[in-house]
Length: 292
Image 1 (spheres, rainbow, N blue to C red):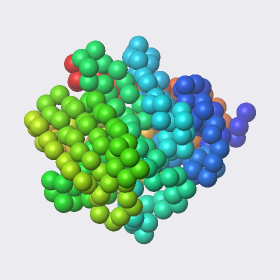
Image 2: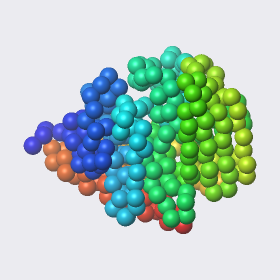
Image 3: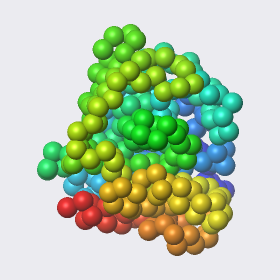
Image 4: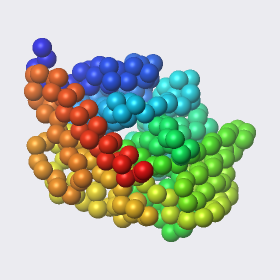
């Protein structure tokens, strides 16, 4: 029995919950080292576990969950943020090294592609993004000329997305949601400014966000609340997204719709699995009920 939960246990549990992701989870590289080779205090391993637990929760409900083929061929891409590469390594909180070894066109594809797709009967699946929603980011930057920095660890949106690599220098995207369509083209370039070639909209301009998942191994209530307020300001239209905080500290944060407490200090690590999977099932039940 382990003395306490560590990154190795989190990796094993992630593999148990999502065997379809085993090739990604057990892939070894400089990129994956930032998740599995560091201490739990970075929060990256818990974020990964939260994603796997959310996928497991949807499967528990009988939902079909697909992992894009891009990650089977390039598992490193699964670990990078869903935020477009820009030359801003000095920015606070930015990991300037993670993903830099990947070809730039692959980084663009990985930034645009959701980590998981949950099929729905109405033709608009649920898309799960990590540490950013690229289309929302593009839309927001174009409308307000603001490159927002606050990004939830996981974002869930109800939409369909098509991404096409046009050539070595350009990539196109088409993002269709219930009341609108956003499409455009990006130049594959690492600049400080968003390399947007074109952007067009039909229907509503505001891209809806259905759910927010924030993860922490020791975040205080004040900081968690501040982050949620910032996220809600960014993602408030047309409906306020449901939210869940996965927390390694037993401090209540009532501003979130759900809080999942996982005690990382206990030697009996089965409690971690029970807490996080059970909490994500509750979260997914409410999330899907809101979308019917």
